[in-house]
Length: 230
Image 1 (cartoon, rainbow, N blue to C red):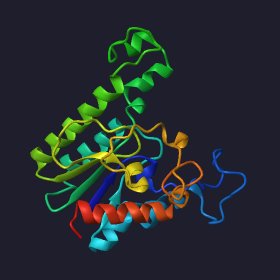
Image 2 (tube, rainbow, N blue to C red; image 1 turned 120 degrees about the horizontal axis):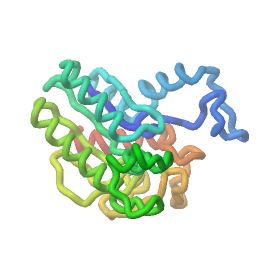
Image 3 (cartoon, helix red, strand yellow; image 1 turned 90 degrees about the vertical axis):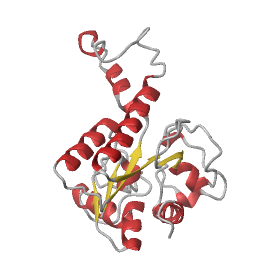
């Protein structure tokens, strides 16, 4: 079985949730599902994780959450491992999202009494390398969890700049690079909704720059070829 973790890129978000304030008013949803139904459909029918599982003729459990950080997903992975819901026969796909959603997110609250115990800051406007430190921590923890529980954990970056360190089963490019055919070029990307889509690649993205249905198909083909040797 495949167990997938990550944010909206792993959910398979198509920016078409009914009632979502971010829905494109010029392209309203036509599927008729509520948000819960749509999320489940996307996770198990549209996401690249679902397509990989289908191709490998195996089951899928998709834990991804829209807008999540790395730590909540790491918590869920830990719980599933400890509870033996993930075994050595399974494969984990862990999408590493931007580090600004982790400890750096505490800056939104600017509560000195709570934040300084987990952040080292020169001032509130300079987060320095905190997001990178958090990403390194997450990748290191994932590597050790793989060893401790004897489970293959494939780690990959979703849209944020990859850390240039070696970890076992760590893909240093991003899903954006897979979509744009720039994998291995070490390109720094902005937050996904600010991406500049290369000419000819527009069909691979939604209007909020998530991978489109075609985009997920391309990502799945890349993973099957490069990580599953299919």
